[in-house]
Length: 145
Image: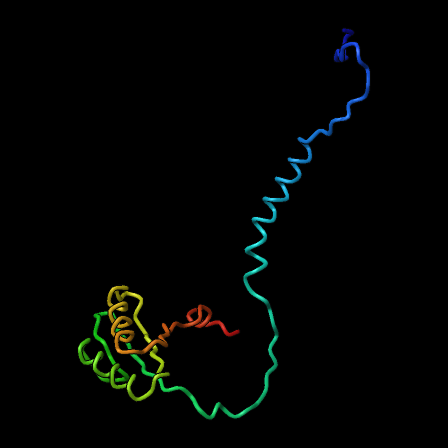
């Protein structure tokens, strides 16, 4: 063996094997790139919707508004109610119209368990359209879009 060369033995034929290490390295890098970018691509499609002056929809679904204050008092509309009274009102609303929507406005300091009890009472009464109302983040800072 001479200095700087590998001894191939008696057979000096060229190697016919492909070195797989660089190929595997490139494939792993591509895999990581796809794993990182795939959730970003499937999130949301930006569409600029047209602005049209039209009359409001003729038939709007009936909705109930429930508010829960910081001290956990429950209001249906502007009237203070207990959870039992609220359940009875939910049953009446479900009998009157099956597509009644429940809009829950809860203070940020209200425990989630209290909101869950109101949602469970609505589902038990047969109301399946439940929305949790929030304010847009830019409205809190006073900025306009």
